[in-house]
Image (cartoon, rainbow, N blue to C red; front, side):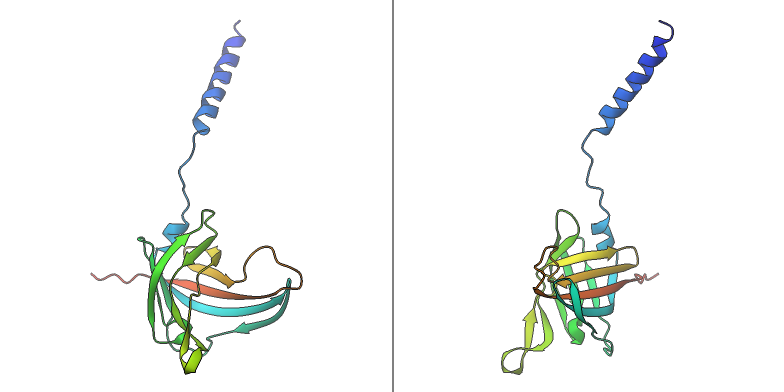
Length: 173
């Protein structure tokens, strides 16, 4: 009986531990906090064209742009992009994260450098379905375009990859 008391005590502690750890946990994702933690400045923009999984071209865009392009996410789920496609414009919209926190969508409409009808710049929704490739304290990489995981081996796909760096917030004293 003397040897059974420590065994019963250990089993009791194991049961209590299992019951306390089986409760549903809160969503502790830090992705929304990282998105809204500052202004993101565009550092690189690449366009890859694929046939199936074979990349047939890689183009770097905006390498001669002198305008600073920034993307800002706000805690109230609004966002602002300034100077999209190296055009002097400020565009606002709203954003939402997917349940898996790997994609976000924005309804922001920007003017693109590709001419539309009658010589006007065409409207585009560049982040209507954006995949978050990397997101950290100081950098963020987004992919847009045909980013679905399943595709046919002969389908043509275009993926635009945006690389951002977080800008330090300027505080006034």
